Amino acid sequence: MNLPFAMLIAYIVITVAISVIVAARGSSSSRQFLTAQGNLAWFMIIPLLFAEMMAGAATIGKAATGFTTGLSAVWVNWGMSIGMIVFIVFAARFYRAMHRTYDILSVPEAFKFMFDDRCRAVMLVIVVVTYCFLYSSQPVSAAALIAPMTGLDSTLLAWIVSALFILVTLLGGMKGLAVMNIVHMVVMYAGLIAATSGSLDMAGGLLALREQLPASYFDLFQPDVWSTLANAIGIGISFLAAATMVTATISARSARDMSIGAWGAAAIVIPFATLPAIIGMCGVLVMPDAEPNSILFAMSNAQGPAVAGAVSMAIAAAIWSSAPAALLFVSNTLTQDFYAVVRPRSTDRQRLAFSRVMVVVLGIASTWLGLNASSILGQLYAAFQIRSVVGIVLLVAMVWPRMSSTAAFWSMLGGGAIAAIWHFAGNPWDVEPLWPACGFTIAVLAAMTLASKERVSEGYLRYRAARDELAKAEGRAARE
Image 1 (cartoon, one colour):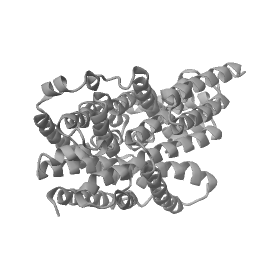
Image 2 (cartoon, rainbow, N blue to C red; image 1 turned 90 degrees about the horizontal axis):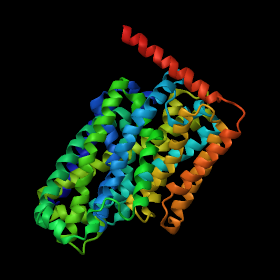
Image 3 (cartoon, rainbow, N blue to C red; image 1 turned 180 degrees about the vertical axis):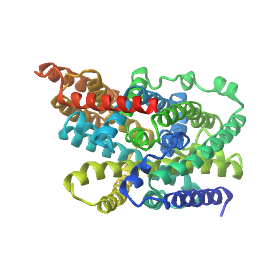
């Protein structure tokens, strides 16, 4: 067994053990399993949010895009940092108010009280599709990392890794994942800093990159300005309805813990996001004939077994921190917004069992999807642009009291469908899905809301009541 592979296996075993030991203290209820019973401090929220932003697929995908395109690869994570801030400024209070008044545990539940059951159903589909997309790229990324070390078939490895992800999710729950992600975040930073430093040395330094690479590699707006804006804006707006952010808000000990956690995660990811892209750019000079999706490991492996092992651990940390979380979030949504609706008298034990069954089913289905996808980073961009539609709807609803539930339903249904169809059609005319989806959504929202006879919708009245109740509770807490 070579050193990098031994380090990788040891790391996986240790972190999985940490997750299971922490979770063993209390995941006996569905609420504890899915939300950690509101006990997460800010230093646990930072790595939990960091996990979605720095997923293993994004890390390997950014190195591959850095190899083929350049620094513009960073926008998938910079857009997420923007989204974190947008959520805290515009949406965190909305979800806290809805949780306090209506005890919501998911995004679709919040949309039910803000709009109606039809919007809840559409939101359920969008959340499931988005997080299945996010998960689908993780087993493939892990297989791309392990296959060169072992010589095993990458498809077989993807299925084996997916089985491990499912097991970690079933055993860990929310608190186990949050604690495990603290370790993952430290390892990710240390491993990629070491690899970036070594890669720059091999390529001759930043000056050599500037002199020998085409100028387009340093252009942040590749392949064009409109595509870059679509990805950055789409990702940023999509975080208004991100299950990760909502679950963290509900799981946080306080609003302050959530705010510090989100701002902290957004700040530390900005410099981190450039590291894989720089490694990919160095690879153009050092290994011009390399396969893009394997350039991250190839450059690390060329620096010796110790660095290769450290980077293997860093990539594993990125993958292991995000894949189980994606499964947990979509399981939470299906439990709260499908099973609990279909079987309102189900016991907590039955709901917990259902959530665990969904982890297995969705893990298998998403792995199949990932194995048949053409682009790792493209899958991530598509997921966020589909979700951006509902972010637009929610933002408008919070500032325009007149907006009706009917307008919300048709704009979400049509906009989400257009984004998904546009993506699977291969982005006709090289136009990103955000633009046609956004245009349809805004047009329908405006037309149907202006046609409504109600000056203030019932959903807005419910939101305002919840917001006022939260303000009173915060005032009482401040006086005490």
